[in-house]
Image 1 (spheres, rainbow, N blue to C red):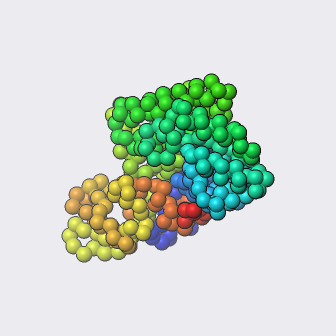
Image 2: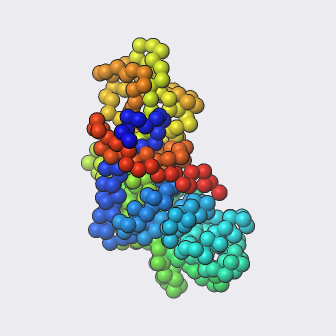
Image 3: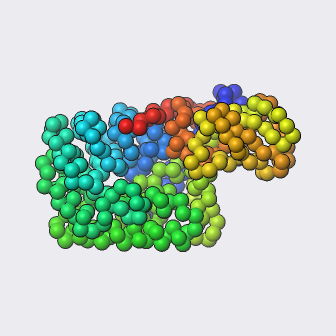
Length: 369
């Protein structure tokens, strides 16, 4: 069907830009001699995950057991829950899933290691476990060095568990605007990770996986000689917030293209210079700021409410009429995706003959547990 017949609001993928993003990351990872374990929390879609694997990704990351269940059901055979999993029900589901696919999980607590071992024994599986270290994000993770070694030894000593390496992700650094400041943070993370790997090696524990990195810093970790698995996710879509992150030359990062849009329709023109769209809080995430208005110079989006968003048209070159549509670049792609049931894959976006090529369900929408 032609794009003009797609009702609004709709979550669109520009397939041409999306495919270039996938290929670009695959080429960069291959050239760096590291592995890509793409983060599926961005897209929540086995359809997209399979495309990433087809281009060389070794597996995917998920943040929740329920996300991992959706990925495995969709044919993904190698999944890291790049997060801690606590509570008997979640641990049982994690262990049960390990009967169907390779399952890895993170930990930062000795009590949790005992619970993981008990769940593995109950389901007669072996869980591969990474020790998460805090490399600057001040979220989950034990201190690098001796504390991590103690946990790794505990994992290696438990039947049903295998010590698989380190999780060393610095999420906060991904969105630091200045390249120099961002690099300084990642350099500290790399140094802490390198020291922890050396401490593990000194007691005879090897790290098959040293994982981390995101879209804002992956080239730094890839060049470190320490990290061997990158966990970037947003690169497939890019969002308005990542467009504010700067490269070494001071320009916005241009490695990847915007490929995710919310197509919104004009529902009201109540006053001169003000247009109201049918996409608000229930269609877009606002934790990283307002969406950018694609292709309309001088127009800005603001004042979102449940079902409305207001365009300031004061600087616009052309008016918008009832039923006209605009493309919005989400401020944060991951939670925006979680608000929608479907991706509408469009070929030739930006041209008059643009058409819908595919529709993919957001299969892990609401997979929060």
